[in-house]
Image (cartoon, rainbow, N blue to C red; front, side, top):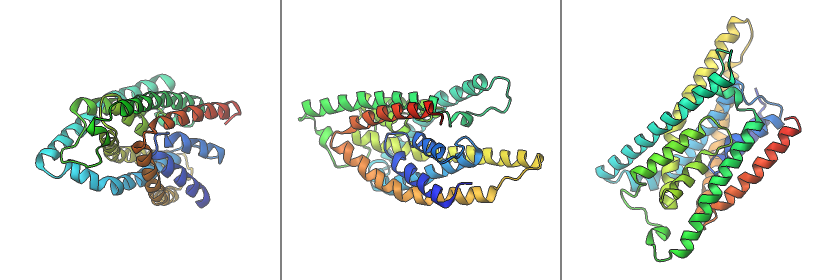
Length: 304
């Protein structure tokens, strides 16, 4: 398992990158490889998921007052939100899990125990995913910036007051859920970047898209935790049968420590993200992803 210092570094990287639309997974994988860790091992994928859990709690803490006012003030507002969240999550599964199954059957042909997580350390796969996310964010950001300049009379663009029932439309929720499904198999294809950008392109204003995107993250994270916990238990069972040692207790302790540290880093990142959204700088995250994709390609050619 990684040392305390390495866990601290990973937590800071995860916390800052998870809530910015630049793919925390890509950044954490690169950090792990630079520190000599195996991002695809069950222990490290559990650590990554628990880092996501820390940022999930940061999301709840940061957005709760907005969610409460927008989604839970009235029974009607709650129903609207639950229907849209359920619809988006179903589409995430409908889109994402068949792709995962296809990849596992084709990329690991001849290996009955191939898992999508085994590809998470492949920088040659992460780099194009970062580039794709960068293009999507850049398109949405530039379009949103142009509309904001030319639609000063449009009150929804500058509205800062959150109203009860203030939600994305059913269609916008569907598009955001579907694109979230595409993010599941690919490290580097930023979940928050892709879903918020999709919401913007579908006509949602930035506040609604941001709130709903992170609400979807809270729904999705427990499912990811369950998957990685099951994967770690399977690895422990296989190690026991082979007479090998797998430090399950150490893995859990490291994961929990990372979760706490990423919570605080995540709060800082959320404040920065909201500020950039409010000032129409969303496209800059796209530029960053494009540059990051090129850097990851370079690291891959160096042998990482």
